[in-house]
Image 1 (cartoon, one colour):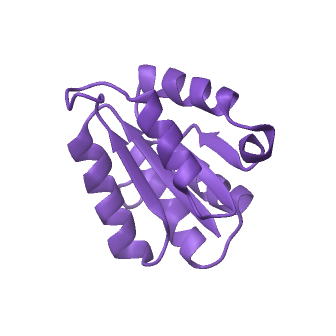
Image 2 (image 1 turned 90 degrees about the vertical axis):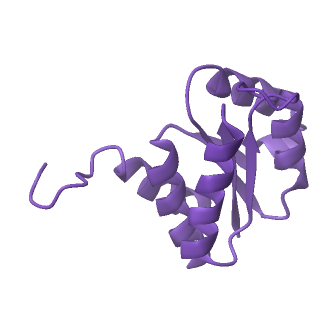
Length: 132
């Protein structure tokens, strides 16, 4: 099974996206990591690491919102044990749409590569009918 770690500068955005994914995807393991360790806007590398290491999933996709969330997630992944690191991917996709697409496929039993591919499609899919 694929699990999702959602890294945002905002606790509310991470939690809200996790709620959306859980509502639509059901039993997918989702760990929101939002804000700095003191509760302010920012990123929390220790929180990211704890979320990844706490996943029960066989494979983990990490979704990041902007700037330092990417840097924090990359640094954390580099510091993981080699065994864990090979099970983790950071996905370069729109945060909410990508996590949603990946979560729905993960719930259906797709592997990480399939979930990542679906998430990446959200970069080019129009939200408006008939638009490209």
